[in-house]
Image (tube, rainbow over all chains, first blue to last red):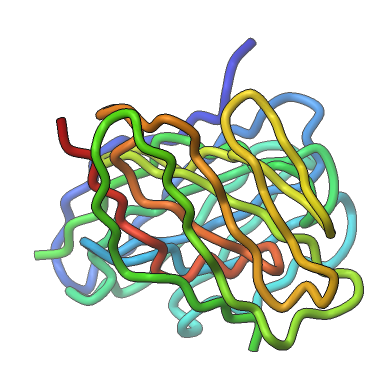
Length: 114
Length: 105
């Protein structure tokens, strides 16, 4: 079956611009996660959605970052007024339910802020 | 903090057994131990999960002692394709920096 998909695969933008990154989770997965990974580093948690519960936004680094999940499926991560330090690979994952379930990751979106 | 401690890197040779140990001194009662594998330019992939004692699947074994303050991922007879970064999680969402395993011929 289809896995987690993300778009675009690559995004180059100029400092100060807004960007939107999209994630399509596996059908039927109620949990969705966003992480970012800087070059050579581990994964940094950003935000977690579980069903209809309020999202866990504790990992968002600043108020320039926001995410929404529409209809319990597709999610969009928005970064406003991008900075060079936002350059990273943004990874989305989904799981059947709850944080202890296996997370299935998408291929990521590589964001480069010039 | 839900942090774990694991070696930054390890080297091995094809056919050897590799054991990667992770420390999680402040593990909570409801925390599970989960290991993921990540190849370059890909998202992490789930390897194995356990709560205590030993868990084995077709890929690896996971040993967790009774006090659960550490865990050991065991990869039997590694091959070149096992070269990757391995992450130990005591709580979901906290991946840390991982262990970079390099398997040589």
